[in-house]
Image (cartoon, rainbow, N blue to C red; front, side, top):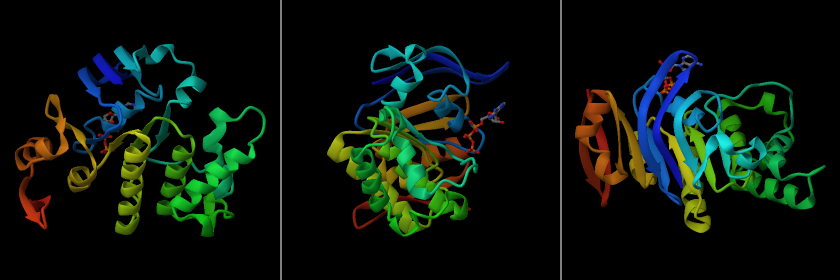
Amino acid sequence: MITFENVSLSYGKKEILNNLNFSITKGKITSILGPNGCGKTTLLSSFQGNVDIKGKIYINGIDIKKYKFKDLAKIISFVPQTYPISFPYLVKDMILSGRTAHIKNIPTRKDEDIAKQYINMLNLSDIENVPYTQISGGQRQLVFIARALCQETDIIILDEPTSYLDIKNQILVMSIIKKLQKKLNKTFIMTLHDPNLALSYSDEALMFQEQTIIKGISKEIINPLNIKKSYGINAQKIEIDKITFLYYKP
Ligand SMILES: Nc1ncnc2c1ncn2[C@@H]1O[C@H](COP(=O)(O)OP(=O)(O)OP(=O)(O)O)[C@@H](O)[C@H]1O
C-alpha cells in the first residue's frame, strides 16, 4: 500500500537519506527504530511535504505528489513529535479539528460524536473543556493522538507517540493502536525509541543501521545483533511468561 522506490530525502541541498526502497504492509503496525539523528522524523516528513523528495513514493498505487492536500488528509493522519502551542483552543475543539477534511461547513452531530468517542477512549473527558495550552506535555500528546484518530484515516503515522507518556498511558495508547488495527484493519507507522515497545506491539519494523535500513518481522529483526548494529549497544534476549524482551547491558 505504501512503496518507496529509489527515494532520496533532503532539506534544500542537504541530503539526509538516499536510495530508500521498501514497502509498508497494509493493515500492519510498522515501527521505525534507530538512533537519534538517523533520519526517522525525516522519513515520516515525506508524508507531510516538509522535505524534498526525489524518487517515487506510492500510496495505494498513486504517486504522493499527485494527491491534493485534502484528499491525502482523508487517507493519512499524522501525530507530530512536537506540538506548536498557539491559540488556547479547548481540548475538545482541538480533537474535533481532526475532522476538518470531512467537514463541509460546520461540524455535524456525527463529527462531534466521533470526537467524543476518542476523548473517552483516551481518558480525556476530565480535561475536555480546558484550553490545550494549559495541560501537561503527556496530556497534550494524548490530545494529538485523539485528534489524529478522529480523522478516521486508513493510515496513521505517529512520530514518537509515547515520548511524553507514563507507562500506564504508553500501554493505553499502544493497546488502542493494536485494537484499531485488528478491528478496522488500519495501518500504523510509528517511530519508537523503545525497541521493547516495538517488539511487543509492532508486526513489522524498519531499523536504521549505518548506511542502510533493514526491514522485517519485528520479532525476527529486533534482536541483539541488530540492536548492536543500530545503536552500538549490547543487548540480551530474555523470555518471561512466553514474552520476549531485550535487556540492555551497560
Ligand atoms: N529542517 C531541517 N533542516 C536541515 N536539516 C535537518 C532538518 N531537520 C532535521 N535535519 C537533520 O536531519 C538529520 C536527521 O534528523 P531527524 O530529525 O530525521 O532524525 P531522527 O532520527 O528523527 O532523530 P531523533 O531520534 O533525535 O528524533 C539530522 O542530522 C538533523 O540535523
